[in-house]
Image (cartoon, rainbow, N blue to C red; front, side):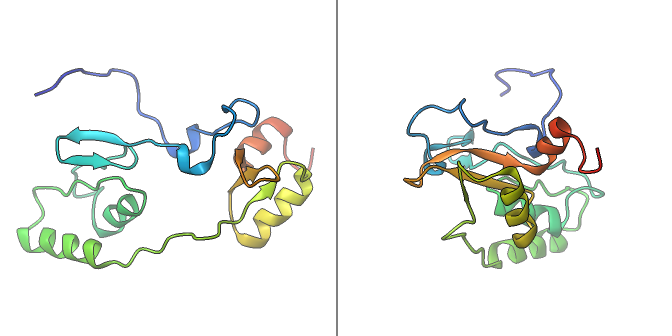
Length: 152
C-alpha cells in the first residue's frame, strides 16, 4: 500500500555532500545513517533502487547497488534462470570493507588534498580532525565548480 507519492525529481550520489562547519559537533562517519525501511523485514543501507528494466538492471548494477547497501530490482522479463543466476552471483560476491580509509586532516591545503586524491585515485576524501573525528567531505567535482578549473 502506498503511503505517500513524491513528485520531486530523484537525486544522485553526486548531489549530496557534508560540508565542513555545517555538521554537528562529534559527528563521525559511523554516526551517519541513510537507512530506509521499505517493508517490515527489508531495510536498505542507502535509499537507492534500480529500475526493473532489462536495459537498466543486470548483474553489474545489481552488484554495484548491493555493495552500497541499495537494491537492484531485476526485470520480470528476464528468464527465471537468468534472474536466479544474477541473484546467486551477487550473493556469492565477497565484499571487502575499507578498514583504514584514506583521509586528510582539516589543516591540509587544497593542493595537498588534490595530490592525495590523485595518488589514490579518489574523487572524494573524508576530512578529519586531529582526533580522527569526521569533519566533512572534500569532493573534487565541487571544488572545480566553485574554484574554477586549474587553467583559470
